[in-house]
Length: 251
Image (tube, rainbow, N blue to C red; front, side):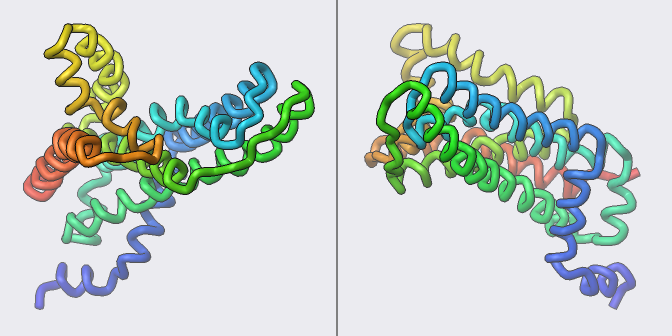
């Protein structure tokens, strides 16, 4: 039995997850990103409720998606590229030679953060809904459709996974962030290119294919389009990124 194998067997996966969670929160960039994510999401929920007055719990909570859909993928990118930008990969992979376990441990807290962020938005939307109803003199709508809520959370998880996949594939935070931010604008342009552009958008743009998921009314065709876009933007890039990390020489 080699020394590396003995060391790897002594590190429980739960400990790896805790370590990667701490890494996600203990750098200046991650702290700023996490703080901005929370504050912006809360500001959007509160601002829309007070300014425009839709006293609908799910509508107000969904407003946070404007921030979550942009910043959660960036947080994922920073998490998986941090080892390479800070040159700590050698230490990490020396302590845990099985790089696949490290990559999984990096993904778990980021995807969990996406779920927690959605639940936090729902929690904040409760008092905002009550205040909006009182201020604008309308009746509050508290009903939540389980399918729509789960679909909304699943959408945020998918978009976060897209950021993780792009980060693993490129291992370069600036390039991955630029692609992540430009991607929605590029698809908006493609969608204006007539029938062919609309077809490509309907099948390959995650922001379009997840609409039915958020509505909670998926059909067979919607599921096929969602699966195709997830395959193109999450599964294939992440698979290629994992292979790259497993084979890359660490210096």
